[in-house]
Amino acid sequence: MEEIGTCLATKLAECLWDPISRRARYLFCFNQIKEELVVTRENVSLRKEEAHKKTEEITPRVKKWLDDVNAILDEVQKLQQEVGGGGKKCFNMSLKYSLAKQMDEKAKRMKDLMNSRLELFSQRIPPLNLSDQFSSKDVIDFKSRESIFNSLFEAIKDGKNKMVGLYGMGGSGKTTLAIEVGKKVERLRLFDKVVKVVVSRPPNVRNIQEEIKEKTGLEFEEKTESTIAQRLLIGLKSMKILIILDDVWSDLNLQDIGIPINENFVFC
Image (cartoon, rainbow, N blue to C red; front, side, top):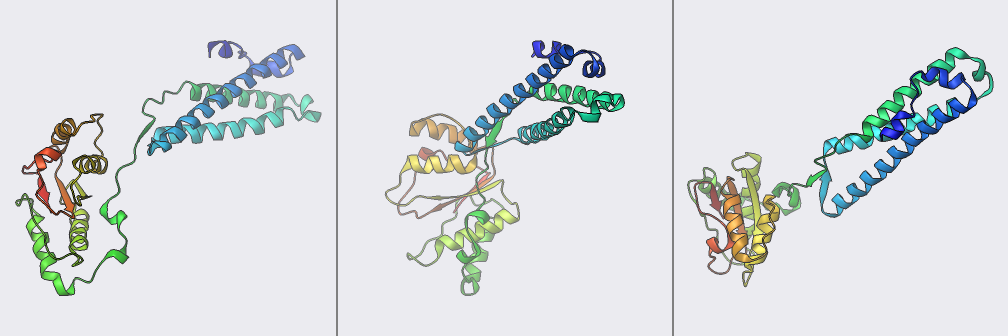
């Protein structure tokens, strides 16, 4: 970077009308800066692709950096075309001075962009809300069971009941009913998070743990059920959360999964 910087002349206006060798030397250095910035942009673009593969999104700072780089490179391209235009411009000293100042300004901006620190590059995409996961076609007519809906909502809205059960025959609409209550809780912001986890049978503790981990945005590297449970216990205790456990057919040991029972939790 410093070698490129030393190529910049102090009086750039003179460089454009001084002997050809000095002018050519300055233009060469200017092009070097541009090429370095193009390479840096390509490296950042590769990191962006890798982040997307990991279902991460680049931070607003990185996005702005890419937008700024693309903009300055477009400006530099147009300026280089103007500088190389020749003709009557060669005898217009005022225009030469203006072009030299523009080149100096853009060279400095390109160097600043190359020296930018993009420490926080990407971040995990937040899990979808219940309202994003289910469309309006999933909504059932609650006229016939409005009282059940209201009772379920009242039972969980203030968090005083740590566990609420909803049971009935298969296909009776229990899942959709629980989801609609969860969506109302979400709209009213009664809990920090609302997540739905399918248990099914036989229960697969590891799958349940991974689903809770992903949907709550927790990050840790533990691999065994017992260590994951410990990390979930620690992470979930800091949240006020409604966990909808769907398709439960047998008793579940919530402690083994990593779900703490405390004042911040309600289960359906």
